[in-house]
Image (cartoon, rainbow, N blue to C red):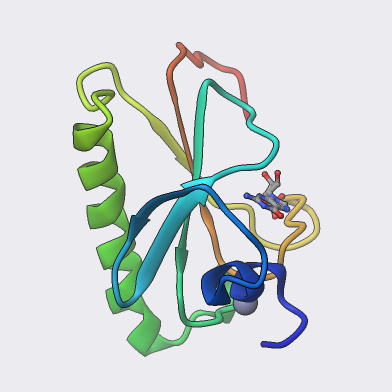
Length: 114
Ligand code: 5GP
Ligand code: ZN
């Protein structure tokens, strides 16, 4: 997708602070963190939103959760815990139309919705 911000990050046309990368998945720090640790985990395949997922995309979503757990372990917040958020569509406030998982950690969130 030519006009997609996250596709441009995947292609390296826009710089990002990478946390993890493999053939199918990229994770990088959010530019405007809502928590001490705020990482975005995305499929390299352009999927506009959770609602645009096809049946085959269920595999990559499962892998993304695996990557999230790997990052949590590597960065040392697995024990304390973490929150994963996916905004889907306008009522959820999705701004970037490329499926992304917000991985938030480093504080006690309680009932706070990020
Ligand atoms: P959404 O509101 O769509 O769920 O989340 C989009 C996220 O992308 C926001 O948390 C925002 O801070 C982040 N973001 C927007 N533009 C950029 C960018 O150019 N680089 C990075 N690293 N994050 C971005
Ligand atoms: Zn995209």
